[in-house]
Image (tube, rainbow, N blue to C red):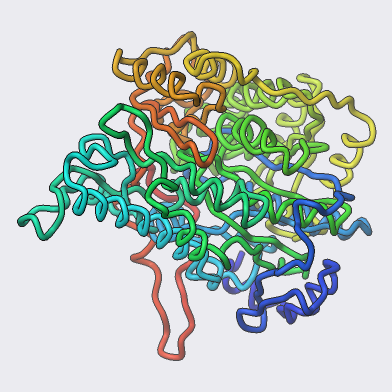
Length: 565
């Protein structure tokens, strides 16, 4: 099958005005970035718009290097709902340059289920990532400026500064740096570091804010360090939130593009799910729900990360409702990898490995059931999937009393997702729905972490050094104990060990650090060896990217197989 670039060439991309009309967006509300993409400036506050549509959330089993096609499935499902005469919009995240040039490559779907213009979306798009980077680093500069002019006895104790800098690139050598060396004219020397932009609290704030007013308020609530009295110091205390919000005034506006089949697509915000909360902006999802019959959104990685955070963090904001139904994406390739097959052998038929690896999918099915929402298991079909393996997959799903459907949106576009779309509509109409959060907010932070570890990951318990426990208790004493928890861990396993495939049991989840994201409204618990600044792999995707003499970008297509690290 041709790669994504060749497939996209076979479709006529429509003017953005036509896509806006299809979505119900007046042309006067468009701020165009060329002929095929635009930002939306809605004349009324989006947070006040009545919601007429139904939300469908797409998640997946534990990801593997073979790719599960979660974004592809979300895009194809929206197209398929259109084939069934429904007005649908897909709402997904913006790609980060780190993964684009690192391990994953481009992130605009695949096959005949893509959002376009793909090169623009994968690279600078409308500048949102750069705006988040600038706003975050402005605050870092203002923190160091206060340290320089106030000295060691000022508002902030220089030994307690928690605010780092960010860059939208995988760059491991920047994880730990020393700034301010070279004499007093260069500020106060101290240790700090860089995170990737998608892990920035500013990115989380952008995606969790329903309007500019809330955005500025959340920015002001960022804790940048602690004072001499041991109390938290906020960004508003150094009067940073106004300038930060000014840098984000355009980034908060949703971006409108399209799928290959002309379905409106809102591509906005890009928090990682293995570090941050992993969902596109609430403002774009809410706008979609005010316009369409159905909005299809996706959450990062497996149900243990993106879906759990979507329910327990994003829905708790009150800006969007719980989904009417969810889709749990699986592939035979992933099942075989979790069943012990080596990456190079996953195309060969192996029903035994499918059966063994199904334990991983079963755990994700159990996770979805915890929230009381209908869900459908989607088998994302690859061209070389065997009929016997497919038949066995559905037998295993039905044995678990799960709704399941075949999805071939990669090969057929929306037409290949009609079976899945029909099953999702049946789940919405026929299945019981009793949404519930995983934990109440009034529990201690350690208890919330343990509930997630036991119920979602299948751990026997958690462990942490005393200093981590003291950090969490201090957050509670400072008034942040009722925030939800955002766990940062590897996406490649239900545990914090990326080599523990399948369904690991009896393990202890090791909490290695904890940090406060007061502006975003959650506490981050780092587990295992997770890094908030990734590094490039041995053969980064950037090596395959090039531009021709006539300006055409090549090499952004997803590759079929990549190395784990």
